[in-house]
Structures are given as C-alpha cells and as structure tokens.
Amino acid sequence: MLGFTYRDDELFCEGIRVKDIISAVGTPAYIYSKSAFLTRYNSISQAFNELTETLICFSIKSCSNINILKELAEAGSGFDAVSAGEIYRALTAGADPKKIVFAGVAKTDSEIEYALKEDILLFNCESEEEVINIDRIAGELGVKAPISIRINPDIDAQTHAKTTTGTKENKFGIDFARAMQLVSRISHFKNCIIKGVDMHLGSPVNSLEAYSEGVERLLDFAGTCPDTVEYIDAGGGFGLLYDEEEIPGFREYAEAIASEVQAAGKKLIIEPGRSISGNAGILVGEVQYTKSNGIKHFAMLDAGMNDLIRPAMYDAYHFIWPVSTTEMPDSELFPELIGGGIFMPQDVTGPICESSDIFGKEREIPELQRGDLVAIFSAGAYGFSMSSNYNTRPKAVEVLADGEQFTVIRRRENWDDLLAGEIKL
Ligand code: LLP
Image (cartoon, rainbow, N blue to C red; front, top):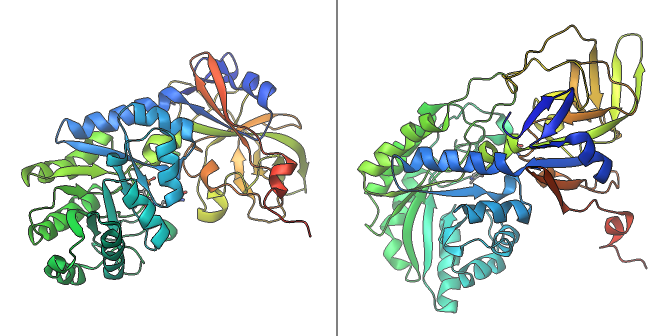
C-alpha cells in the first residue's frame, strides 16, 4: 500500500516504524504519508491531463489539515470547498483562489460575500434562488460572480444510499428542465457570468458508465448555454481500494470523462477527495482490554467512532491489522506481502457508549492483547475531518510522515480545548 508496508514484523509509514511515531505522540493518532498524497495527486493529474486540460480540485472535506492542503497546492492542485471555512483553510494553506470551486446547497450571504471578495474560480450553484442571491450580492459589491450550474443528472451511481447525490431523490443540483429555464433567463442576472456546468454523482462511484453518461448530459446542457461556458466539472467520487473490490484506475476514469470534454473544446475540472487521501492515512489505536463472552471475542481500543465514524455511519469496511506482528496480512492492500494463517474472529471496537462503535466485526486477525497497537487502514478520507468530541473525547493527533521524518501537524486536543467554547456562568 502506497506509503505503508510491513517490514521486519513492523508496520512502517514511509521510512519510519509506526510504533516509533506512536511512542512519541501516543494514541489515538492519524498518520499520513506525504508521498502517498503526492503520488496519488500526480497520478490522477497525469491521467487526465494526458487526455485534456484538467484542473484537479482536491475535495477539502475528505482531509482538511492545512499542511496537507499546502503540499497539494504546491504540487499545483486546486480545491473543492463546501463552506467559507474550507475556503479560509485553503487560502491559509497557500491555495490560488483562482483554483477554488465552491459547492454546497445552502451557501449563506456571508459565505458568498467572502468568496466573492476572495475572487474564487467558480460558484457551483444548486438552485435558482441561489443564483438570484449571488447576483444580488455581487451587484452590491460591484463585481461579477463566476457561476457554474450544478445539474442533477438523475443517474443512480450505485453507491451507498447515504452518499449518492445524483438522483432526483437527492437535494443536490438542478434538474435538466429547470436548469434550461434558468439559463434561458441568464441575461437577467447582470452580475453573474455563467462559466461552467457541473455535477457530482456520489462517492465512491465505481461505475465508468455513470460518469460517461453524466458527462454526456453535462455537455448536452452546456450546448444550450451561452458560449461563456468554459468549464465542465465532473465532480469527484473516484473509487478507492478499501478491501478487494474492483475499482477502475485513474486512466479508465479519465477515458470515460475526458475525451468528450476535449472534443467539445471545454476545460475539465474534477474534484477527487477520497481517491487521493483515503489510502494516504491510517488511524492507530491501542487495545485497552480484551474479553470474551463465550460466543464472541472483543478487543476494545482507545480510538472510537468519534475519531472515525465511517463504519458506524455507512457500515464502511476498513482493513484492520496489528502494528507489530509476525503474521503478515493477506490483503489486496498489500499485494507485495505473502500473508495468511487461521485467526480467531474478533470484534474490534471503540470505547464509546454505543453499540455501533465497532470498527470491524468478527475480523480474522492475529489475536489482540491489551497494549497492542492496531492500525485501521484507508482512514485518510473522511476520517479526522468527520471526527467529533462525542463523549467529551479530545480529538486525535495528526502526524505527517515524510521519508525518515515525521511532524505533528495537529496536536492532540486537551481538556481545556474540550471546554474552550463554553461559557461558565
Ligand atoms: N465534490 C462534491 C460536490 C462532493 O460533494 C464530494 C463529496 C466530492 C467532490 C468528493 O468526493 P470523493 O472524491 O471524496 O468521493 N463521508 C462520506 C463521503 C461523503 C462525500 C460527500 N461529497 C464517506 O465517508 O464515505
């Protein structure tokens, strides 16, 4: 797995033993590999740019630490932001505002004002009322707002019900007929200029057909728009290997999306999040206790659903393996290792007072003991960024590894942080 491998019975992140990082920073900890981020960014950028000019807008919500955004910005990345807070993050990290697209169904006046003042590339608009509002605010500021119309292409991207976004059941985008009506009135909006059309089908989307069909619909729609439309934004959602699923490579996604966009003479934008960040990070917890009830064995970690909510929220699968072990994993994530063995099924849980606080059910992994460090893989996307203080637990530390070095890029929260916003009467 890019950035992570087992050597000499130890998990390494780049050139450092994970257990050495943990000795310095404690658990729970998110550990990211800088080279994994950059390699994934460069591969997706290359795959698409070989076919047509493409701006990669990394989806900040998947992994938002400013140090990671800085590395990506320096590599040339743009950003997909969904709040003024994310735009602020990106700018703090050194992003070029002309490479920021701003999505979201309910942008507030103050968010729109901020983004207009920062002169971002595109507002991806999700309703006619939003366009009217952006037009009004741009007029008050005396600027022209560059907008893109987010189409809801009504395509079932065959992903988890909670992460599908491109069907009429979902709140996202504008249906074709209404989008056409909106465009027919676009000249009424004196302070907006329509620069793009966009979509986001869901995430992850492993179907190439869904993308090619979606892009075809975007291009059909762009054909009815004024020729100020320069950009076709196909959104994010590219797949990630969590286990053994079949996922298309970047090249295949590029082929499904880019050639038609190039033929239409438009520039392409994509908004990948998970496919860049997902396998670039792990969450490490320490086994506090183990127990058996005669039927099941449990290993309870000090990391919980407040640190990584994906299993509880989406029944998501994350590969789990001890950090120090003589048994190698048998997983598609580590094709370079010969693994195997027969292991006792164990439920790997967190400490939180909810039955859904389970990272893996009946996982056949080496028998865990109190004090063992356990890695939860593919946690770089929607891991820390979705973490919370639920159960009044401090958020985990974040560490970025680079070769033989590692740096703490967000310190572990302490008890004062937990109460910082509360007003004691
Ligand atoms: N663009 C837009 C407009 C989006 O809404 C999203 C994700 C992306 C790009 C990036 O998608 P990605 O390439 O990361 O799949 N918390 C869920 C995922 C929610 C995705 C929300 N939108 C999870 O943990 O699976």
